[in-house]
Image (cartoon, rainbow, N blue to C red):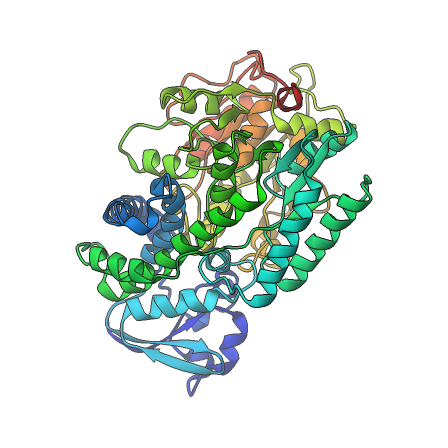
Length: 582
């Protein structure tokens, strides 16, 4: 069917700017919340069942395109100092191309597309040009992954930033004393870094954290903390540092060479490849700039670096520089990773999720695994690693609480299920994660099926609210099931997890954390991805408390729970002991 004019809405407020037909205009909205509230304004182009089904094919397309792009760039002399283009470019391309194919598939053909830019509707005749415009628009949206990726492409290295970069280098020269051991952390807060920092400081260790600043006020704030820590060391000011790209070579011939090599790729249209090639060139040039700067600020001081990930230019440059300076560098498994059947969509998705967050191709980095599943993945792929106790236990210690393995002797009248799945904006990392449309559809399906045994279960929904899904919207979705479903609010994830009997998620760190605490877990969602497809032997024992209700849930959802009776029975070392061992 041909649509003469199709309005593409990215925000709810844009409805107010629809022309002549108003609310009856033919539109497609990229925001699932708006779609839910304004169904009469949409021809239902985004079908969650179809996008979930298409996601497997998208994974193969992304894998093929990414491999062709990376292989075509290898050998360009300008980038010879980058050790692994696969690790540096792979995660970037996976996000960009997953979203590209997702948007491309949901857009109908033979239409004139109208996108609201600045203060007017702008017309586009091709999907490719429209997607490029959508991407550019979303780089200005707070919280968008496009904005995050853009931070590595468009870096305004003006004279003021150069001055602050120079000042920081001078301060760091005095901060780092050769007779001290320094513990460098990959971020200033988040993940398990907060807990690690707390214990290192408690043990009177010198700690400095990377601060991914991009604005002048952020640089100034970081310089202030670093300067105060250098002059008057105290426990209240926690020093941070930033990285700026110093590009010694201003030659732009690499861009021309990239475009020339990308001409051989036929899995993506020319106009999109041209835009992507330009971004890739900036991405790699800035990586070289980060490498130049980190080489200047990291000297032969005794530094021990701990990373939650080594992906993307800044942390990639920092980790590889530490290794080159013979500094002990640790990568703690971040996220949840399982072995998958080779050469399947699950295998490729799992690999891209693990690259830079479970393992790195940078030699000499010490891999630290937090779970049995991560152990399996690293062993299967031939990586040496250290088994460490789950960092969630460190967080438990920090909170002065007692986390206990689920007890078979404790009988609850109703099974308490924690649903903590993860969504990714506009199909980025499709198949292994759900889009917001797929998540909402999946949640409704989950509630509907569990309603058949609602007197025996309680469902707690926990989600990271963002631009596409907000608390009020989610409340409206679960309203028909409010007798047994509620949204988690005002409590920590650990509290929710400890208070639950089991956990359900398609793919999330929460699966691994629940397993480590002896909770049954299930991989469930809209797509065909099964996080535990290769772990069929880890079934529920009949002796497990509430086994019969758990079995009913399995039957209703068509997926099995995975359960490890003693997930931490193997010897695992405390990471704090490992990193502070002299």
